[in-house]
Length: 226
Image (tube, rainbow, N blue to C red):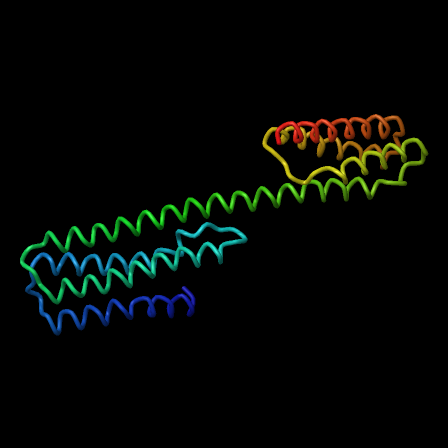
């Protein structure tokens, strides 16, 4: 455990130490159920603030996701702290009002937190999918571009150029329906690179045509599914 971790733990414990010290020194230990219910909910709301970092999905947008979840948890703690203190000061012998009000507040918090976590997961998946879509066309085009002019045959080089133009001009947006075609394109790219390196002219021409056909099939399917 490094020094920074220790300092964060100490910082997290400051509220609990101060609150509990004031609570027990000023109010003692004899309280009705409504007070203990409020005491428990205040601690629960604070613990949720501490737990929030573990609920944030790891992604490139983690900072944005974290801000929204922190805002919700911090807001819940602030509201619960005020409401809890009110019930503690009132010290009612009946526990029902304290329990119902704070259960409702906790329920609203749970709905907001979970709905935001679901929305964040959906957004993260969209970001990752978009990243893959852009990367697929960019990387595949770059790999073919490196092969342009490398074959010893003019016709073979023209086929490679044709394949490059077809792939480079393809839409970056993808769909699950074409994932298998994209996998085939990547496999054929590896075969094309090997054919060029071994100067297998017939293979270069044949594989280039196969890749072009696969790219055109991918683009057709994407157009139909839109």
